[in-house]
Image (cartoon, rainbow, N blue to C red; front, side, top):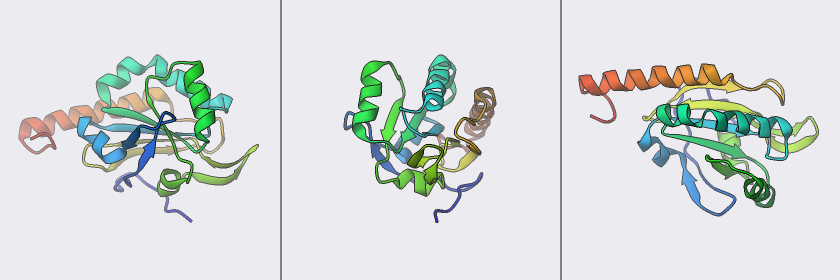
Length: 173
């Protein structure tokens, strides 16, 4: 069984592809700032679609506070590509067909309500140094971390990084 990732743990690196074959890795994304990493059940799932729409409505705030928002789904490329082609998702949607990232972060579920081999909905905030600063793993398919709480944690992290940079201790110093 995969190790459950907790606050303070180093975030496991991964490289996944988008439905249109672009490769994205976690650790290089951290160079731009903290990363909000969202695991969803799949773009076929109404609760996951609602979560993406909720994130899209807050994209300006997220852009100010996070270096990147990465959304990970264990579905096949064709299903995710269809979702992207049918709508707008300004964030990186990554496909995890071998469950590498989902297992590494401890959110993989072999069996779930009406689905197999999916990720439990989860949110992780990872700082520039690669440490998990916040994690929320859903207790049900419709559970999700409140976006206001995530934005507040990202703002707090941004302020902390600015203080560290001014003191000459931060990653940008």
